[in-house]
Image (cartoon, rainbow, N blue to C red; front, top):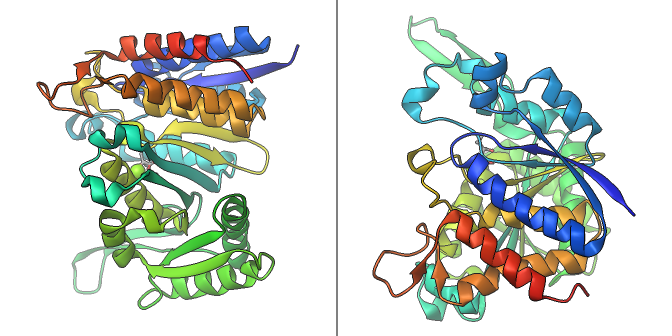
Length: 368
Ligand code: IPM
Ligand code: MG
């Protein structure tokens, strides 16, 4: 019997609620595939800071080091609550970025997917959606502005100033380019490279290296699009995209727009892949305003489990089964509160009910 150790970092806000639903799926997958998942919770985020004095405590680091994969819930507090934590200990800077750096999870894979049967969740018109929305954003995750040098001070005019630098070297760009070309090769063989080379020197080097790496993938067509134009096309004609690759901050912003065109960030799971370790997380925040009410959408968390099954444990078919089970639950007329307005004719269900229905649906699906 194969056995995997999974570190579960519940996180803050709605994190523990949506993690509970992900665990239901992991337990079902384990029993029906005869695989042992050892699930161990680790403290991470603002809750970890209040409990252990650090948002990414050593005991959690050790747990993650030993785990075969990490499933992470959203972290963060409301703007007001965040002020109770020193700036460098706030969970984004004190836990999330260090997690990414620790395992060099440079490749962030964010599928933006909505089958035609769920088109009613999208704010886009049916004629724009066509047969559904289906593309992948590949975001470089450990470089750029988020990890570059930062400086604050008083300038020679006596004014406060700040500088942050957008840094990449060619090896970092080549690494994410390879992931992008390989992903495109397995799909429609078209790669959209998102950049801002009319202004940023970083994009000039980025595009150069993309072109060089592309020579090893002659069957993939590369198309270069400016990031601002890409934002417009995502609304007007998302069907032209299949695989998109971009630097860290562009990817942070455009992947949230991806969630927007689906209808909710609650539909955005993600995988963060490094050379030796991967972790999986919803692309959204911890939504402290709705925490504890059992109205959060656990799709992105369960979708992150599906990505883990495929990418860390090579369980492609079971991964597809999990995606399919979630989509069937929605296609049967159910909705979570992020996706529909009350009175819109859907059957509004709780976080917990969604997880139970996915379990029911998955139990009915043959494994292979
Ligand atoms: C994301 C999030 C994070 C990021 C935040 C929480 C630091 O927005 O994963 O997209 O900006 O990367
Ligand atoms: Mg983001």
